[in-house]
Amino acid sequence: MASTSSSTPAAEVEVEERGRKRKRAAGAAEPAAPAQPSKWRTRREHEIYSSKLLEAIRVVRAGPSAAAGAAAPAPPRGRAVREAADRALAVAARGRTHWSRAILASRRRRLQAAHRARLRAPASPPSRHDAAAASASAASASAAAAKGTATPPLARKAKVLGRLVPGCRKLSFPTLLSETTDYIAALQMQVRAMTALAEALSAVSATSSPGAGSSSSSSPP
Image (tube, rainbow, N blue to C red; front, side, top):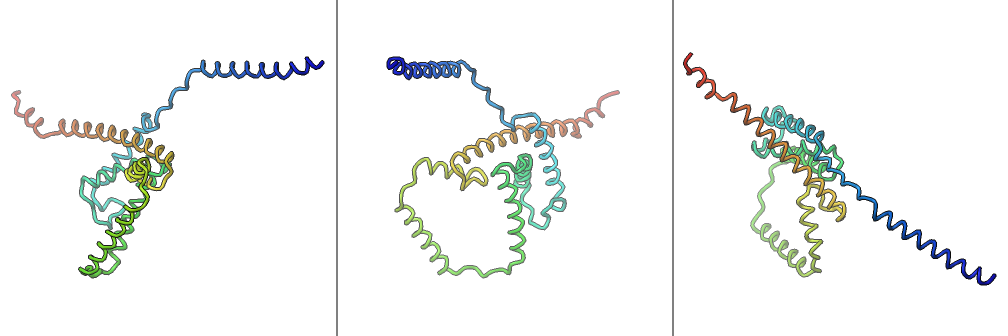
């Protein structure tokens, strides 16, 4: 009886070890799941963004009177097209990411700042003494920051990356990487859509150019 009771735990341990080995072998034999494609690489997302981009460019070409913020000063045409393309990209993202919400919020903040600047009375220019004091305080602050604890290289790179991606300055590192991956995929889709739109507009302008009509009219009957 004693030998039987002492051999039972050893047998149980052996059975458990065999079960673990079978599970590891089955896990190694299973094929890896295919990576899901980015939502910005699907044809549906490309069509949605292309339609929103075309609508935004039409609004820009119609002039500031047709835009929602007609009271604000109109930016240059190139900057207006770039901002319209970014807003269309943020709208296509449906506000599900930090960078898309930041792009949409920046437009509202600009309009509110322009409205407050018009209502505010013109302030007197700062004196030379005030400018010197401000520069001295800024220099002392930078010197104090330099004397402080050195920032690790990874933290510095994450800080730079957070400045490049809209709305990602104060996110955790895993969330920052996720937002950056989504933002890069969205920008790649934006480049493809704008390239296709530019090629289509160039083809339309080439077919409707006056040179084609004049050459056809001057040909002999």
